[in-house]
Length: 87
Image (cartoon, rainbow, N blue to C red; front, top):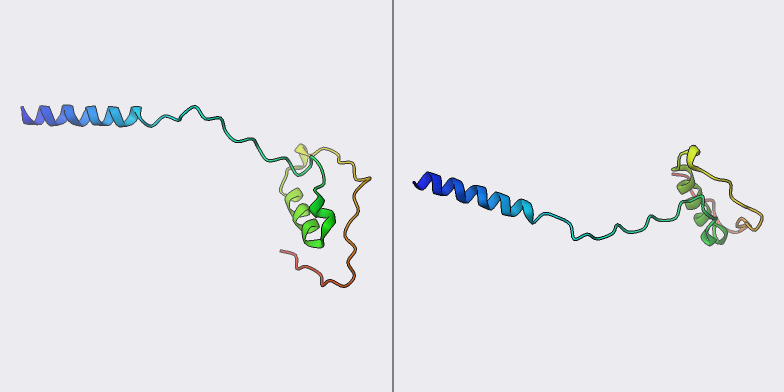
């Protein structure tokens, strides 16, 4: 009888632990905007910001990219700064 009692207790514990593992119905956080939605202000502020934007742009697949309006984009023009190393 002891083995049957232990086995029943084991199955009950396993079933109750399995039932407790559900999520709370939370909605997932919204996806960050794609790098191709708009050129961020940080890309115009410094060469580091421009490099970071270009790196994030290169991580996307070409099939998923849309054209961006670059009429208002002014790249940084600091002549007194040292060039940033490329990773």
